Image (cartoon, rainbow, N blue to C red):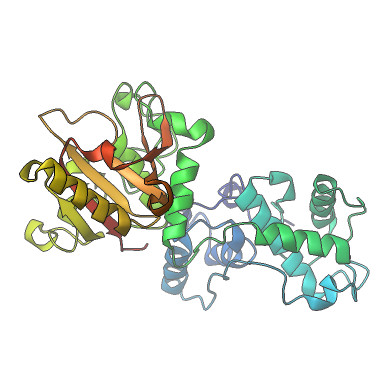
Length: 377
């Protein structure tokens, strides 16, 4: 019998359990369509599918339901399985319920989630500790993809290969997101097919259930519109941090992302005066029009040295036009000391993308804010 009922199993799509799926789980529990036990199974058997920050939300739900179960911390490697790595045991020859089996299962699920190699995913039973047909199939898929003997067993060679593959992945902050999670979210949302939904010609596909646009479906109203603030807000949500919102008047705890030139009103310096919650630390701000060109270059050089991966750079262009690209940038890599540039993920006309930019890109702005997200889910 599968670990989860079909409706709940379907929430773990593409080996990911996202914030939108967390909302759906919560809704189903409140409606009596599922129960606490299924939430506990996700927290334990499917913990390595959980996206950054979602685990903290799931922990709160479990506690409210009277459960003592908490979300398992994400698996990083197999370092503690020394007998397996050294060849002293082999799975399942050493027993179909050997304690090491669950670690192998978790590793395969984590690899499926972090590398999108979905044939490694244990969708029906998860990390249940039983070396059954589903585990054998996933092990064989891993062996096939890594030039190993395809026998469905985990001996030293396969264990070491799984360990090595796992160490190459970024471990998500399931219950405590980090700036690295923001970087990974920005890169993911500016790469491949998903990137086009942050371009002007396409509809937006929202991933944030607390935004008042429905999630995971094309929103045609936003065709032919710039999506810089939408990109930034979705990066925050996917990276496990709370975005800023203009609240609507429907009392459903939803809202819209403010225009990029208003995000500073959610920083520690300005939030109280604007009756907003703090979502960022304000690291620096520049008003270029009040400076000479030489002064501005000096200030921008100072600002670029402060930027860390995961920081947000918000700008207000000169003039009245607000609909064009580059208002919301997410720093993914700081190369300023070596080549004078920083890698910024951002929305653009055709899609979201990453650009290498120098201070020249900011010389004509009206206002610039460097903001560091500080409120995790």
